[in-house]
Amino acid sequence: MNDINWGELSFGYMKTDYNVRSYYRNGKWSELEISDSEQVTMHIASTCLHYGQEAFEGLKAFRGKDRKIRIFRMRDNALRLQASSRGVKMAEFPVEMFERAVLEVVKRNERFVPPYESGASLYIRPLLIGTSAQVGVKPGNEYLFMVFATPVGPYFKTGFKPTPYIIIRSFDRAAPQGTGTIKIGGNYAASLAAGEIAHEKGYSAVLYLDAKEKKFIDECGPANFFGIKNNTYITPRSASILPSITNKSLMVLAEELGIRVECRPVPVEELATFEEAGACGTAAVISPVSRIDDIEEKKSYVFSSDGTPGPVCLKLYNKLRAIQYGDEEDKYGWVTVL
Image (cartoon, rainbow, N blue to C red; front, side, top):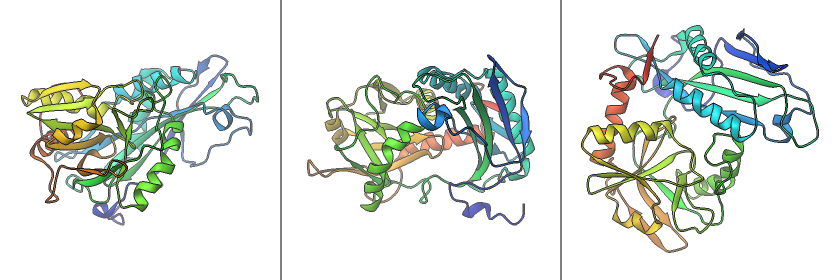
């Protein structure tokens, strides 16, 4: 793999050697199948195409200084995929099979796991889709589970550097009691229009407010939001936010570092009191926020005026990365070592 410039990788798709698949038919899942094809053949009336019966996950594998490969919190991803399946009435994929599929994909694409200190990692994408042929609105009875992998660089081109976000009230990411708490493509489709407006105006992403009252902070585009003040890590709780595995990890690490943790509704006005702010998720780990512009209210909340991440964001980012790469002890059993 000498022809890959690991340090210049973007967050995108690159062909790798193998993917893994399993089919749900007649009430049971097939044994895992290895494929070298990038294509999927399905019926034109598949429920994933017409009724959004689809869910996905994202996790990463890292190569450590010891050259060993570590996969981060894959069981949590397996359980979250099951929660998403329940949300859109798909057959649940067994946790143990999910873990076997992820391990198989990483092993078979080992040559694509970037080297230590390259700033890149192997992104793993499990995907579950409805494949039954039907035109009535009801859950299907056939499904396809797949896992593929691709090496990626940082999610934002700037890497671990603060970037600006914008509040746009004319779009909602997800409705309360809707599908915001599960990881399905529809939530991301709903964010594309506002996301494009944000990018055109020079912002990294949209900070969404709650869909019901537009009073509380929801998510920021593809990630959970958190703010830091008075040695406290504060992250929104609502009925429309996806429970981020990275956010859950950061909350544990914050407490270990002596930082209080609060998961609660966060009014938009509270942005004025935060010393630091960040977006967190598998893709970006932590993306520090430089400022949040609320154009409609003619307000700008600044968290970094000199372009550097705040001390708490930096400490949490370094600690989580150290566990992922094996530089620091994994006290929590988060990491699977190949």
